[in-house]
Length: 280
Image 1 (cartoon, one colour):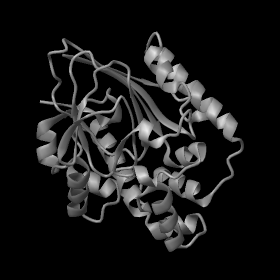
Image 2: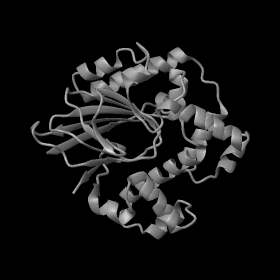
Image 3: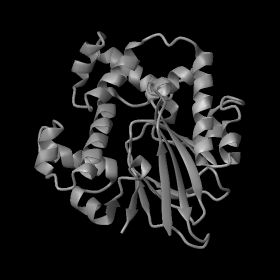
């Protein structure tokens, strides 16, 4: 079974909104199932559309379930494992959490730690014809273009985005690779720590501390893929962990395994989106 994936560039005018656009396709007979694959927390709201009728099977926490035809995944700290049959194809969008709240004018707190069918979250016409356009497009570049046009129109319809301290806090956490304390983030955006914590919980369903930990570990994981010979000591120091035990704690929480066990089970593949990895 061959896995084909492609990531598409984000236009400059949408870089404050989107963090990624990707397509994913399994080439092989429908009777063949892929190895178990891994999708780590990425600190983004994820919209995923199946292009083909068959969908993939998701293991999230303790149960395997068939994925919805179109789904939205909120901010999460748990890993997702999945398999899919040959012929399965999907497209995904990584949306910055603060942009999601602004564009759709609703908090994303209820999405946190959940995988939700888009029909159960969005009101009629909130996604317009995007799902149908994605499914009926002639090829993957056309699907990416449809998504870009949708978000351009949505951004234009929403008008001017007044800067808000929560948006600035989100941007600061990502820019600092999650290494700053909540006190430092609150001071940077000139609000009290408790006010910042309440706003994060209401709008995104996670605390600023947890979001920072997710962002930092995502940066660690991306660094590991680029520098496979880096030692645990190097990673601990480079990304500001107080000691190696704190790094291992985050590794277990966000991947479900310790570093040695995880890396023995999954082979990193840098060309795949969402830090997907094919099991050995």
